[in-house]
Length: 321
Ligand SMILES: Nc1nc2c(ncn2[C@@H]2O[C@H](COP(=O)(O)OP(=O)(O)OP(=O)(O)O)[C@@H](O)[C@H]2O)c(=O)[nH]1
Ligand SMILES: [Mg+2]
Image (tube, rainbow, N blue to C red):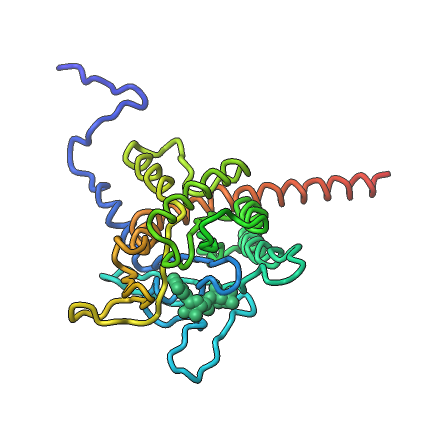
């Protein structure tokens, strides 16, 4: 009888007869599709930069109230409190539960000290709620996820530099959430000005030691690393938002009209809106969700658990002395 070679531990072998575990990807897919995906995006930035408008543009329907006027007699509306809205978007049988958190613009007070506090607190509160659910004895099999997966940070299109307040807020946010910077209302800049502004912002971020998403992970393959590099090159995305459709060549497009003509939001020669949309929905959706859980939430969780341990050790010490 021929001796059968015993595979060494860890060696890759293929099954001799069909076992069927290759269907695991279909099983996972089925389960995930049934549950759907939850994606939570937040918009942050100075007042009037088009945060509410961009949300509407992104998801191509009028989801959030913005200052954009439909009729001449409607007063402009400014966002006055942190406001979350949920929507379910279905595409080819995939259900995306989208939570959009609109925040009031900051930076128009004389004293802007602490204007970011409520925003950072909101982000941490979601981590805290998740941790509490995770720690309960009878925890649910599936914990609803309200953690912010992506924070779009709006930069004023001045063409010069970031405001000191922006640097402070960016720093605070980057500690707790995936921050994606965007140049708002980029129709205010020529392509040349836009390019120079981007370089300046990048240099300022490096100077202030602000490290933004995407982060390279050890498990990333070459393709993913290249993609991240391309995204980092492009950041901040230069965006134009609009809720209005204008008919161009017989087709309705999201666009703005200014003194230079029609700016088509979805035309990459005009702005980088489609790059942002692809990044959010096609290439980095899952990574934004994973990074939130594995980096930001994990940091929060270990800090909280350490604090809990310390306080219970102190209590014990006090009761024995
Ligand atoms: N030129 C230009 N105007 C824009 C753009 N996006 C929005 N606007 C206009 O800017 C104004 C403010 O837009 P909002 O979306 O309400 O701004 P916001 O950032 O939500 O404002 P707050 O809620 O007050 O912080 C509106 O009149 C919009 O039509 C853009 O890309 N370019
Ligand atoms: Mg608003």
